[in-house]
Image (cartoon, rainbow, N blue to C red; front, side):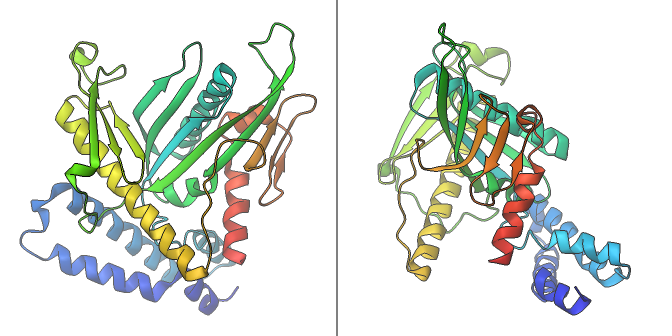
Length: 322
């Protein structure tokens, strides 16, 4: 690939325009009045500037190849942090244990990539595993990488909970959305919200198990439910939960718009047979196969230990070629 083709693939002109716009915002006297937004924009400018400098100074084939890999992250929100949720499918303890295995896989993947991970919420299963969890994963191209994991994940194994040692199939649904920097365009009517508070069970300070600091928000029109119990106070948990809810509503709106533009009709995805994006088979043979790309690995232990780059790269390559 020559440099001109790479410039189009990387959308260098667009990125230069974005960098210039952020620089103009940073020159305004009240730029740092909103600390979180200012920090986020500052980080984005650093990323854009580094990429533009890399492109302009790239001469060798290896340098161009590295940038070609970077071009896989060309989506509008690929550079954003990710909010990743895991939900156990039908099947009680078996599915809940599988959901926890997936949560650990994403936690280990994040650690290997040097991403910063925060467990925003976790609902434990009755006997083992988890019913659901909500993770915030922060770092360069976090959403760009993890969007490949959205969908139903299927596990086939000899159940550790079955005295007869029978083979079981379990499902879990993974949802991934970008954490949006700007959410002022998302309007929510308070009457559309059901807000519950409950006792937190995770991190959050000494009083975490003695006060109702955790918050669950249900958006009644969309039926989206968001919980947060990571912060120290109920107010902070509500603020975080509202931000995630707004991000989910914005992603929903963007997806609907995209479907309308493409003339597609969206179908609800449930965590069950036939909908899986990837199968993890531990018995009678060892294999993990992605059904969208046909990418296959024969060491499930490594995959479940966070080695999922091969699947992610194959997916990103497929959507960039399409």
